[in-house]
Image (tube, rainbow, N blue to C red; front, side, top):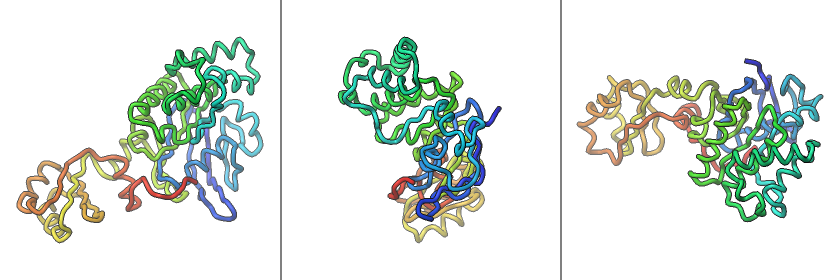
Length: 312
């Protein structure tokens, strides 16, 4: 498949401080590609360079074969952008938001109206088309923002933290629509710090931390490569860690200690549980669960995906 986004040694610096530190990746036509990492990792700065909102400090960045530093206007005509913040016009109706945005791309009025009606139906917003945006729920506003970004039929849709702040039901509705868009051939690029979102949507992803790429690949491959299918999580008295590792050594590939919790990567989860029965009376909590991308990130960095830093 053709690469529609190509980055090599990409750097972004603010006042001499690099927030994106020489990353390289490519996005193929028709795939869903994710940038996964905690707040402050450099995800938003990366996508803002891709949609020509921020200038590139150094490196190569091409979108649809065009250099972002030379062809920004042409690129903007061919991509749709859903920013983190809600930038809808609250004074306009739902339909009005779409029609005004369509005018920015010089769509003929009849074509714009037909496209707007199609998108409202696709996102389940038909019955709200004459209501003002301020009356919508958060999930409806997010769906409308995505619909607006599609009004000019872009080749690539870029979404920055598309479901932050939404309740679980609203998040799943957004996911359904994004999967449907991918099935229609739209290339999707999005940032997220939600591991379940990345697993649900991404064909491939890169894990970013502190401006650098830690890993890349398909979500399930990354989990299998670094952790395995399952993980045994035990919380208890740290004085028992040595006994746990001794009793379970035949079934433990690797382990990690985080505060009062030990994470064991087993070769056989049930056999490991049996081997630890002699010391299990000193456990506060024990669970054998599927491994996740959160576990991959924790193993790579020693901390979780959610932290207190502001986004870069």
